[in-house]
Image 1 (cartoon, rainbow over the protein chains, first blue to last red):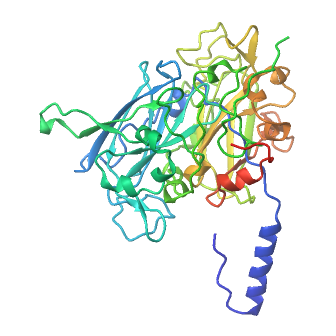
Image 2 (image 1 turned 135 degrees about the horizontal axis):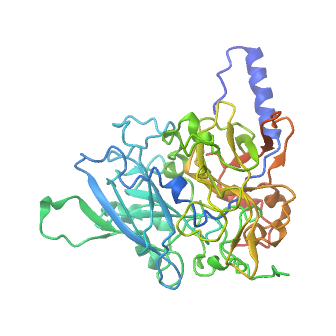
Image 3 (image 1 turned 180 degrees about the horizontal axis):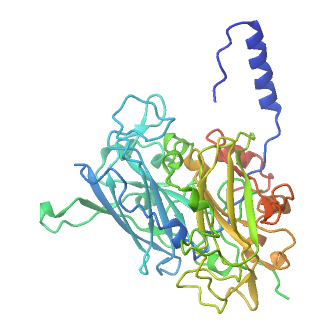
Length: 220
Length: 250
């Protein structure tokens, strides 16, 4: 929130007072987290968004398929998976992203899917463009992935990156991940069935909550 | 008497004075689902400082009335209650136009869900789901019935305290929160491993609604107030971590 630009000494003083008050105001304690539990689906999946709105006709359309798996290798059949991403031009549909890039208001960038009895989930969306990191560097195309489930007292946050994407090598976030664990963040391209007209490119991305090949989760 | 002494994991997302650890063995479902490797600290980027909240806004007025939104033309059975409060960020700034989604058991403690099969009666006039957007002052408001306490299989004679599940987006991806609201003076709260996993009484208090007679409406419904504080784009996990006690290293 930016304060209004002061136009004279009085408004400058007012702005200063407001800023001081704001700095000194006691910080409220955050509301803590609890598990989504096993019974969320009537509420949160009545508007399931497996197909991110606005992607149906895009040439950049991709399909994401994966499973959520627990530490015993069993499916997490009651997982809820959400994705958040920029559009194919690398712009987020959000008021803070005011960059001069094409924006299709229909493309929300938000998907929400429930896992089935096999722990499997899927989305259809577009492959996002690169987005900025700081003034100089860009982040490789990625989806922010959030997973909720019974037994997760707090959600887990991870990212899906795309294989065969040269920008991955310079991605500042991937660079913070121990090299031997980076592969957990990079989707695999599914084998083509040879019929190029059969649909969008398919990427496979499993989320392993615990154990061998545990997915990298971020402290965000 | 159930003992709540338990193994508590070291992996926590965000401020460990506020958020529960992933592993809390007394809550059995955490044992196979809790991450065991350290979370990777990363700076917040445009990907986390934006979020789906502003675009997630499809609601109707009827969605906020759980006593009638089953659409049967009849009213749900139970103690009618109003649950209201404000959604704020840490500085106290109200968060308008934020989607609040809720779900809950009916008055007898039963969910309409294929996996809830305990013999509490179903109410054909109660779906137990609702949603609304916060108003310009950050206020949400639901009319519902007080949820019942229900049994679960976590340990012998285990009962979940009465609660309403809440899901909020807030202004940014870092604001996203799924949690549960509880009622004061619930006799089984202290026996509940899901609330016991919260690291301290202050953080636990953040989930307690308060009876508010100014919300109560005469000859209509009892009022409960519960404010929700979400991380705004300015708050970072590293800021939160700096408030953690020194011994609580990652």
